[in-house]
Amino acid sequence: MAGVQLKLDTTQWQRLLAKFGNYPRLFRFFRALAVTIGWRDVREHFKLQEGPAGRWPLRAEATNKAYLAIYSGKRAPPAGYQRGMFKPGGALLVLSGQLSREFKVSNVRDTAGDGVTLYNPVKYAGFHDGGDDLMGASRKVPQRQFMWLSKGASELIARETLKKYLEGP
Image 1 (cartoon, rainbow, N blue to C red):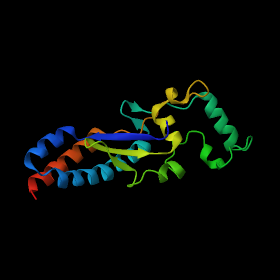
Image 2 (image 1 turned 90 degrees about the vertical axis):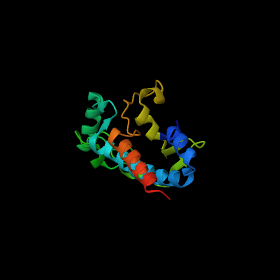
Image 3 (image 1 turned 180 degrees about the vertical axis):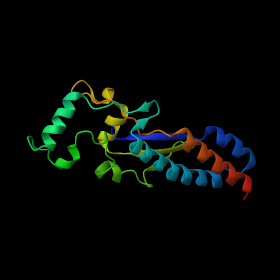
Image 4 (image 1 turned 180 degrees about the horizontal axis):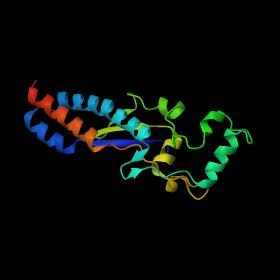
């Protein structure tokens, strides 16, 4: 999978809004909220290191040993990486570099008129978000899902969209 995505479905909202002829203006508002609140929520998942089912799984013992060897200078870091990124006990996924740069407002698309999709095109983003099944048998990567919308963020988007709707044109 190239990258990862988060879809916010608006099918039920569309049915309601179509009846009142207010859909295009409100959808633009919803889209802006989804992008702003959605990306903020995704970044919060990194900070808290949790997915919709709870805390992300810890690193394997072999991975911790490799990190310690790199961090202590006994082993060179992979090309393009700095030694400090391999601090044992550090964050499981770091929101920096290429992955961080691709969480941007322009990485959003309307999906067939039924919602908004936020996406991160970085190839390895999908490996982490989906876990083992995306890597195949060659490498084991535990799922550390970050492309999801929390209940609080979802409710905030709905509440603000409804508020805008009730304000009228």
